[in-house]
Image (cartoon, rainbow, N blue to C red; front, top):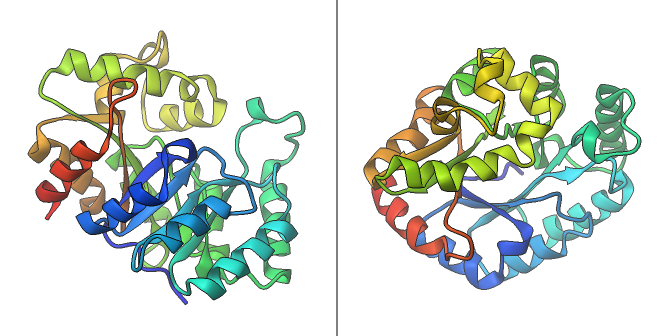
Length: 277
């Protein structure tokens, strides 16, 4: 059973998600919540979010293949799929070499893990793959429902759609800051981009493929880079930046709202929900 994510979803680290948050997101009309920050393979948080809602889809963004073995994750998947059919998407990925002591032959690890999910009965349409570069993007379209790129731009979305073709899911993440002061937006957005993403080779290589220079990447990112990775402005401007991914070929965009430390993101999501209608 294919999971209906809708056009727009919410990406939020696991520590910032509660059943109450998910319930409000559902009332706002967003189609999915993506659990960020390598949620554990027991998928208990995903289950609690599904239990608190009736139509909202829940996806993982992503379960790390080096951290949670496929057999355990498959058991968790089947538990959720049986309890909430058609509402859970298992996002998996290989993570980053800087975060793992053992990170040899990552492509082989992905193929092996997907083989194990096959053997455990996790359907292709019930899983997605974190993907940035061409090789893994192609694999996502061949072995899963499609790709979940992170820290990208509409130009990457356009290139990814060309690689995937017209069939597979393409569900990029987009960071946003609501507000018309560019300096405030960059003050919020730059730290969220710099650490850890501008210290991880997979993301750096992807930005270089997109044409960003070493000067753009250095020192926490140039203003141009931050503006591209963190859309900011009033609600109409931010909504247009999100919709740009759809125009470039995405099927679904998961929106990560960035705020001042400790601020509640729900007021921003409320404004965006209106602007995206």
